[in-house]
Image (tube, rainbow, N blue to C red; front, side):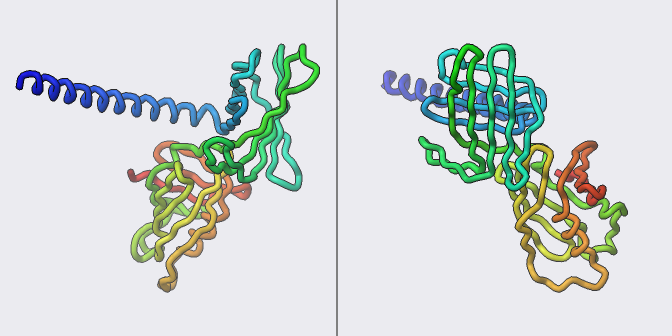
Amino acid sequence: MKKVLSIVLFLFLLVGCKTTANKDAAGTTSTSSTEEDLKYYFKGTGNEPFWGIKIGNEEIVFTSLIPGKEKITFPAVEAIRAMDANVKMYKVSNENTSATITIQQLDCQDSMSGAISPYSVKVEIKNNSELEAKKLSGCGKYLTDYRLHDIWVLEELNGYKVFATDFQKEFPRLEINSTENRFSGFGGCNSITGQIFFEKDLLRFTKVVSTLMACPQGNKEGEFLKALQSTTTYSIGNNQLTLSNPSGKLIVFKKVD
C-alpha cells in the first residue's frame, strides 16, 4: 500500500513540475516573441540544408547548417522593389560575405511540414573566398505588429472628433487579431468582419464584409468604412491607434481592452 501511495505521489509531483515548466516556457516564449516581432519584420526558412533569414530595420541575420555560414549578420539595407509585382530584393554584404535576398508575394509550401506561407524567399549567398554563390529556396512571412492585437473604439474620423449622434447606436469598434491577420467589430450600424494585410509599416484592411441592416439618415458608417479601407499606414502610442494614408490622418481609435 505504501509503495502504491509513493508511486501516486511521485506521479503527482511529476505532473505538477511539467505543468509549471510549460507555463514558464510559454511565458518566456511569449515575451521573447513580442520583443523580436518589433526588432524583425520578416522571417523566412528553408530546408535541405536548414536555413533561416530574419530582416529588421537595423540588421539582417542569416543562419544555417552550412559549414562556414552558421550565423552571418548584415547591416540593414533598403529593399529594391519591382515595378510590376510585389517583389523585393535586398543586396547585402559585410567584410566576409555577400548575399542577395528576394522576397515575392507568392503562396509557398514548406517542403517538410507542408505548411503554406504567403511569400516565397530565395537567397544567394557566398563568402568572399568562394567563386559561386550557394542558392537556397524557402518560404516566409511578415510579422504583424503584435500591438495591433486589441479592441479599439473610434475617437476621430477624417480629422473630427465623433459623437454619439454620428452613429445613433454606439461608436464603431474593431477587434484585431494580429496572429490570424483578421478583424471583426461594429461599423456604427452593422457588424463588420475582414482581413488585414501587413508588410512592415504597411497596413491595409481588406475583404471587408458587413451585415445589410439599413442605417438611419446621418449615420456615418459609410464614411467610416471608406476611411478604413483607404488606410495604408498606422502608428500606435498613448493607447491610441492612428490610421493614415498619403493624404493624411483618417481614423483615431482608443484602446479599450
